Length: 102
View 1: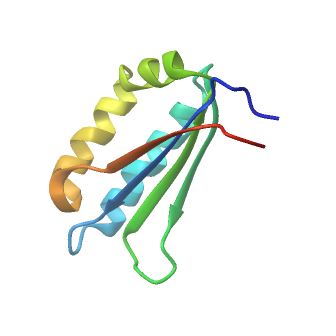
View 2: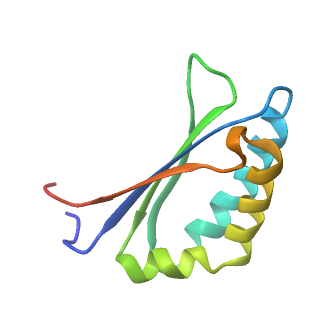
């Protein structure tokens, strides 16, 4: 059962033409580091079945402080740099949700 203060983020990014594998490697570097953070309960990378190179991260954090801590890490800075170079628009689209029910 989730906690009422839990925060869920969904981040989407599409690789620039010819940059799918590089962006995937950048995400593959990010995931284990994020999962090692104390406030992270879930951090899963997905790829659109119909659009190769369109990635989505499903992230669950204990609370907003854990999200803020994640945004201050070196691995977050590294993925932001990779997105600037490899993703359409130079960044991910991030949507933040709060728990309403289990």
